Image (cartoon, rainbow, N blue to C red; front, side, top):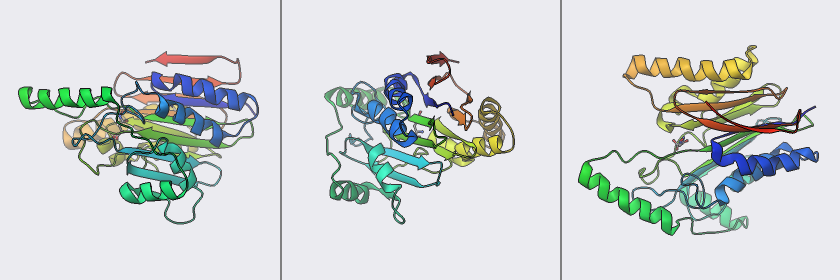
Amino acid sequence: MKWAIIGTWRMCLEGIIAAAEILKHGGDSGDAVEEAVRTVEDYPLYKSVGYGGLPNENCEVEMDAAFMDGDTLSIGAVGGIRDFKNPVSIARRLSRERFNIFLVGSGAEEYAHKNGFERKNMLTERAKKIWEKRVREISDKNLSPYDGHDTVGVVCLDGQGHMTAATSTSGLFMKKRGRVGDSPICGSGLYVDSKIGGAAATGLGEDIMKGCLSYEAVRLMENGMNPQEAAKKAVCNFSEKLKQKRGKAGAMSLVCLNNKGEWGVGTNVEFSFVNGQEKSGRRKQNGI
Ligand code: SD4
């Protein structure tokens, strides 16, 4: 079986390269997906994930993350967690629990602390300056605070046919304290079943979760669509539906991978993604 991996946005290129190293050597999909996302979380200049992520309206970096295992459908997730270095790793640990698999705020922090995860102040000087500037702009020009938001979402198939998916984000810039987006929510931000395939989402969580977009894409693949058809149909149909019902639809993008290593993307905005696969040893970065 050939390995394959796909992730949202250009920012995951280095992470996908690190994950590909694991996969090339016969490594496990769970380890690869975690490594891909951790690499993005650790990079200080990405403003929407992990260290350096933009803060909420109170200037606190609150992060959401999830990990799903496509063999067992185990999922673990954290919402609104502060001051821990790698939320995706905490989510992965939670996915091994029988109960209490989705923890938020201080409960998630307590769990992470008890399980020895590394603490870190995730607010950088740079992110704080951007926040201060935006506070001034909002009051001067009456701007909407909610922009500049990209989630890293990765779906992975290893050489043994094991599929996983993971997400991590600091969510919408200037969000309310306690706001949780789609990214840690099973079926919305991510979904994966090793017998079919997986999907991960990025965009406006408030809209993505109305359509359970990742589950929808996997369901369409289960019904016979290839990942490109499934991703496109899930995003376009739901975007249309929202426009009809509510007059507008927020940004929504999906990356999809099936259990044969075929991939696809769907989006209603400009969107970049990165994928790697065994076939040619090449890693491609594409914008659509
Ligand atoms: C959220 N979906 O918290 C995330 C943000 C995001 O591209 O992905 N933006 O709503």
